[in-house]
Amino acid sequence: MNAKVVAIVLAWVTLTQAVIAMAGDLSPMEGSFVAVGDKDIARAWLAQPTGRYPHGVFGDEVEAGTLVVETAAGAQHAYRLDDGSVFEDVSPRLADLDADGRDEVWTMRSDFFAGARLEAYGLQDGKLVRQFAADPIGLGFRWLNPIGVADFDGDGVREAAYVQTPHIGGIVTIVRASGERLVRVARLSGYSNHAMGSPALDLSTVADFNGDGSAEMIVPVDGRRQLAVLALKGGALVERWRSARVAPVAAALRAVRAKGLWQVEYKTASGAVVRVELPQF
Image 1 (cartoon, rainbow, N blue to C red):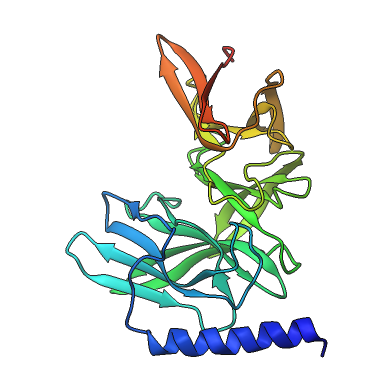
Image 2 (cartoon, one colour):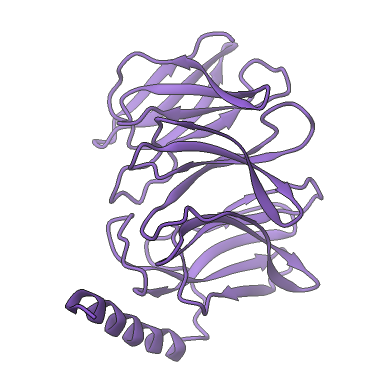
């Protein structure tokens, strides 16, 4: 066993002991954000920091060991990871994939052996349980960043979308629920919705830009100096539009509608706000 592996193992043991000592502390991790909902889950956040998976995607080597939700009535429920994996995220997201009127909590779970995978958790019989899970990337220290949950092909069934390995030839991936498994529907490479080392994950968004009942997504092209609109058509992801070269996308990307026209708005690394008008589709 080499020195680096020994150091990681020792750090893991030390931090695991620290987590056990503070097992009752479910307060939000420093630097993380609380997701707020209006259904059965009122709030969701990440807790109990650990250094057992030192990937450093967000600029440090601390991830979450526990996912916490709070109901509208104020009851808290936690899902603790005890298998060496972590929640490699800054903030969970709330979305209702199966249209049952209750939100799932969406996040990324990662480990040394298989890397990241998209997972969703929900409340069942008074417990927080895993409801949906995609296949892992298959290699440690590989990550993904969610785009959103929507009906991308207009068939009345919602899918989830994310960018796999956004720092390495990012692959936009759409998955659909088959039981508890999230099964891959379509993929398209060449996009990125995250800058390595940044805590900003909001570099992509979803909207129905032409009102046809099918949601499209806006994702930066690899390098984040162009924007693209992607759609799911005939079971395949297609690029419907690509912008001219723009200032690098760094954070807070969103779609806004003004005077009947859609625009993409985002922030650069300096905090400047950039707006790009979309064509009519």
